[in-house]
Image (cartoon, rainbow, N blue to C red):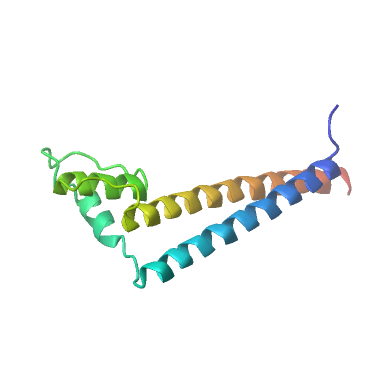
Length: 125
């Protein structure tokens, strides 16, 4: 059974509403983590160290961004710090990576809405 364009739009509208709720929930979790830690959790230091490639042997190698959690884990490994699951920097990095995934999902939903909208406009002059 194929769906009509209108049914697809309704389905996508629901998916987009779920996406917006997930994004709001993730933003709230990020704010709550800042509030619980009573300080601003700044991950720039990890990003800058990771992107500088200071611990690599080859100065000409290309650095590929694989997300905040990977950057935090890599920098902590360079420092010889034991990686703990309840580390505040790892928690924030995980939340930021999750938020990025949610935003990418939203972009895919918006793109599908645009395509269906274009099809509807062409079908109904």
